[in-house]
Image 1 (cartoon, rainbow, N blue to C red):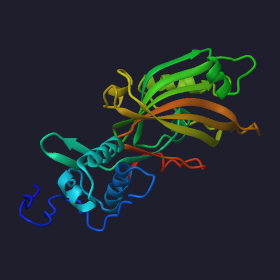
Image 2: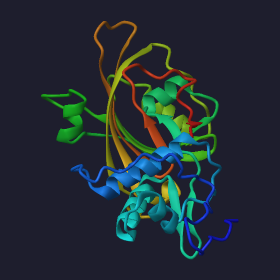
Image 3: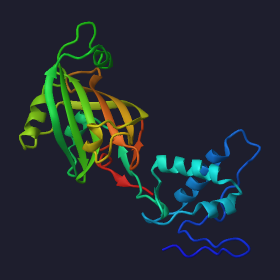
Image 4: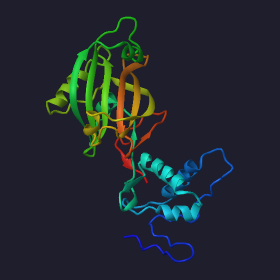
Amino acid sequence: MPHPINRGRGRPKQSSDVPLTGSRALDRNSGVPLYFQLATALREKLDAGAWEPGSSFPTEREIAEEFGVSRTVIRRALELLVNDGVIVLKKGSGAFVTPPRRQIEAFGLIKALSDQPDNLTLAVRTAREELPDAAVARFLDMSPQPRPVTHVTAVIHIEGNPTCLLDSYSPANRVPWLLPAVQELQAGAKPPKPSELILSRAAVSVELTFFGRWGGPQLGASAGDPALLGHLVQFGRTKASEQARPLEFAHLVYRADNTQLALSGAEPSASQVPGSQTP
């Protein structure tokens, strides 16, 4: 528990688990708002130490004493840290350090089925064949005459934790084994790995969004909670083909409060697909 704050003369004693000594000074002549500079300085202190989840974060008074800023600036800075998911505010108790975010490689359905790591499971919500809309057909390079795609909605679990809400589209003629494999999963069986598939690069973009009423509960979140939305295009080919083509277009939705997406130019290996905690 935090120690009582010294309300006598002089500087109050540090009552939190995260020390502020040695913090980066704020530049009051900078064009960057003070609350943003303060949030950055506080985030640096968190990143510098492996604090246990639940550790007490400095109070508004301690922050004011260290940085010489108003409560308005402090509260806006703390709001940024809450939105980043690194601290949580508890009414009447103060601020506390949250558990470290899980670092996740962004990957789609085809990658998950191709590597099949032991600690990854798929909970299929829907699986069907349908004609794509114009946007999906464009991402999958299916013009001028789109053909049916395999459309799968699923939740990816890593180490038993719901991690990603997946909405995936793949050309049925390029990936004919996909729908039968997903149907095997729905039946409780483990489908064999595709033997003729060679995956190449995956193009991924990420933006901040918010959960709706259906998507949030799938990952243990609530409607309106912040989420990370990834758009993925997975390229690949069969052993008989020399040209890599789009094999999958997918929307990937993650919780923004406990997930850190790792994006790289190279394809992640099977050992990199499952998440690992980072401070």
